[in-house]
Length: 327
Image 1 (spheres, rainbow, N blue to C red):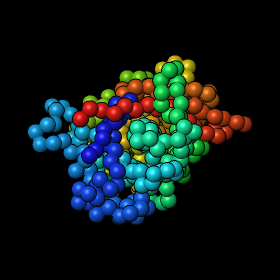
Image 2 (image 1 turned 90 degrees about the vertical axis):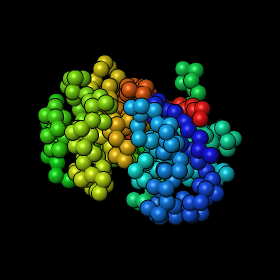
Image 3 (image 1 turned 45 degrees about the vertical axis):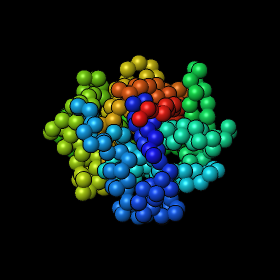
């Protein structure tokens, strides 16, 4: 019933809306109605599709067998509506790896046009977030370019509260006190919105990068959850709606090392929008130039294309690939 796909170590389940209805979930007809009523069905959908079968959870694995669930398409031709459900039952506005996986599923279903399509992610915050997707090959690898549009920067872009402006190598960034309290090296953050909110913490030393294992353990996990998750799962501080957290350090020209802690998920092997936010933040503080940027995460490397004009970042594109996993 649920097909699982892997994109740079980020795993999502994909299921058609009608399959969930056939399984007994009262899912409304449209993606818009589904999003507005998600509290009545989303946790049941995660339990049905993403929980490990009884006695089959591998040792030291995550509590779910995927990083989330993609529900769609709601149409047989583009534009395609989709819901991105985090494993805590909340809805995400955008996921680069998730939309790469959804594009691969549409291709295998024979409904993705050769020229690409518009994907519309519906969520319970405001409106739908649109992403243009185009099939492509990079260095012989077949995948998709995702056009993520123009990013916004600063606390206002993500509705951050109680943050202070600080200097980072001559650039104006923010200090997020809850992060700096966890580690004094985490005192310089750049807020970025690319359809969803991000807080990229800029580091001078790769030793300050947290590992995914460290982020899963107490007390760091609880501290990061309080920051990243909205109430009631977290504190929503500094962003009441929650925020995705990243840590970044410049490895070499046009190459950034990064770690990710997602709201609604926790530490992840990779994230497409997080990688894009990292590349944008790196450009903002002068670490990288426009053009191709490589963002290296535990799950793999994400190629990002930054389009700048007259000192402004005009657009961001992410290349991704995905493969269907055996049951």
